[in-house]
Amino acid sequence: MIPLASITYTFTSSHTSLQHPYGCLYNGTFSEAEPLKNLIICDCDSLNGVDFKIAETLSKDQTYVMVVTTSASGTTGGYSLTASGNDFIRITITTKCKCESIVEIIFYSKTEYSFF
Image (cartoon, rainbow, N blue to C red; front, side, top):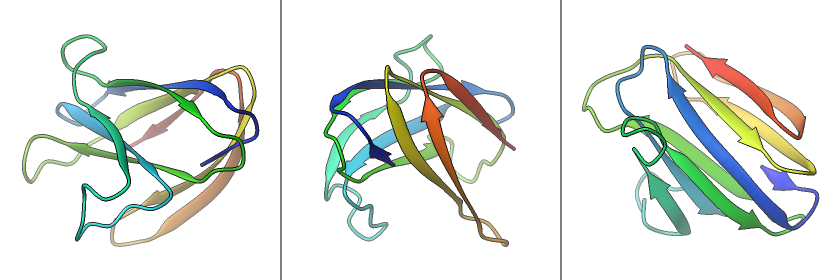
């Protein structure tokens, strides 16, 4: 994702069928081989004891990566990710599954997308 203004954005999860979603925000890139490299913050339960809430000031035109997984090993399922802020943010959504899907969206204010 690439913010079009340097402001605070808030990212929250809402689990549908994914047990205990866990979110991590990275500066620039994410590497499965080096999960601590470029890590800004992770959260798993500050929203309601089950879902994550990450609020960070992001810099304009800088690339960030949000990784959503679960703390329950071997578990898959659906969740909603909400991004909110007072300006535009360009988001590219990539799902890691048997079929790759990439979607580019421009968020304005509060927008919600659900993944199953």
